[in-house]
Every structure is written in C-alpha cells, then in structure tokens.
Picture 1 (cartoon, rainbow, N blue to C red):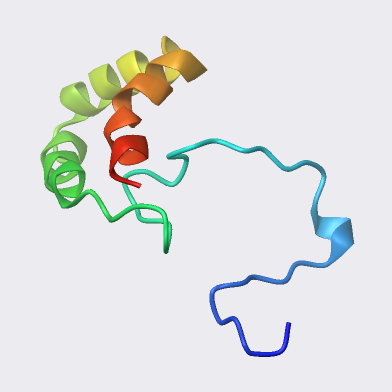
Picture 2: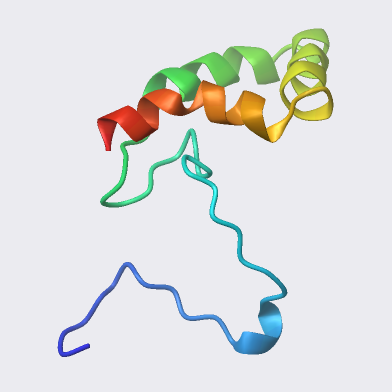
Length: 82
C-alpha cells in the first residue's frame, strides 16, 4: 500500500488458526464500508440482558438452537443495504 489504512488490523501469523467469511458476522456492530451499526438491536439487547429469563430464552433461541442459516436470515437486511 502506498498510503496508511487505519482500518486494517495486523495480527501475528501464530495468533490465527482459521479465517471464516461470515456476511453480517459483526452484527449488531458495524463493519466499516460494508454496513452500519444496528442501533435498534443494541436497544433491544439492553432489555434482554437486564432480565435473566429473557436472556436465557434469547441465548437458547439464537445461539444454542440456531444454525448458520438462521443467523444469515437475521442479518439478510445488512447484505441488501451493502
């Protein structure tokens, strides 16, 4: 590169075991140049995280019992916006 790229992160090779391409994978955060932060998801998360039962139900539905295809469906709107 002929110019600085502050958005690049440099990691030593020994810290990397694998690389996965997951469109929308940083959701609800943003990925600079690809999609914006999902502020509504953060507001919803505040309420979910404040209640133990609601948190456990969210984890069960969105992590334990969820597939990669389920996640892709939840972040489909990010791909359309990109």
